[in-house]
Image (tube, rainbow, N blue to C red; front, side, top):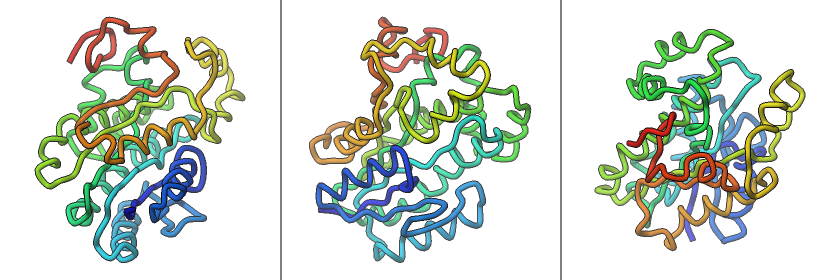
Length: 263
């Protein structure tokens, strides 16, 4: 059994992932704003470094896995979405790499989204803006409250980052993959039902499975990708969305881009 860091453990997918890993016998170091082993705000650069330092202290400089689940969505301001979901996540992932390099069969499972392939108006340029690593320019790019693509663009950037870095990290013995959840019944999603027009948009999303997903179902996929059962899975984005992506883009393979084009 190993030592695994999970961010966002106070609720939702992060809490379900922690429970799954603990049940499997792993030691989990939880990170969140509150009610966690390490508390901090991923939107703040100073907190990011402190979080990394505290996790490294708790694990003795050796980690076997990392699952950066922490994230935010509408109705929070776009600035928080940009800072937490992409730049906060990458700060933790890169900051903990030295500890992961010392672990056994280390694996990182990141969180993308099926919104990356089903959001009208989302462009590759929106995602590539994140990958330029200039946080303030991305905050400015999506400063308008109407810039609804801030969330899916950041999640598409996560997917691209996984694909672009998987081979290089594998040289250090670290497997990187990601899950791309669909609509999941969590405390982050439920408030959207009270927003004018948003409930109608959510209701329009076709889900062949016939229902929203449960956090535990995403945790199961994360547990698989982080385990030795997935030892030959590297650089992949696993859609766990009840069949939505397959329904909307049945001929896109292997990693569709918005509008049906292929990578």
